[in-house]
Length: 150
Image: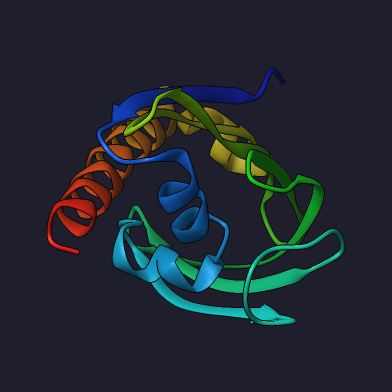
């Protein structure tokens, strides 16, 4: 079955370096990702190739536990991730400067449904899309407020 693919992007009114410093630490996800209940990164701190993240996410009244592995870290710009234990999902985050005090953040997520979840594809696709876009708006607000108030 074809994966559910969501690509969201937004221009953030803050320098790319400031935004990258926030997005490259998975522990910060607790501040902006809807439904995220627990997050533990090993090793802690900025992402690096091979880092693993254990997360507990509440989606559609279900608790989903996953182990995520980080790869293809391009310092100051992007990284990829994929679930290695739990749901079948992968994606990436990137930050690209668009000016001195602005950048574009792009978040990509692909989820492949299995089992009886395949029957709920239209509902799950709508929820994943809405959640990802809401999360991006939330992180955009956090970063812009953080930049203005520093």
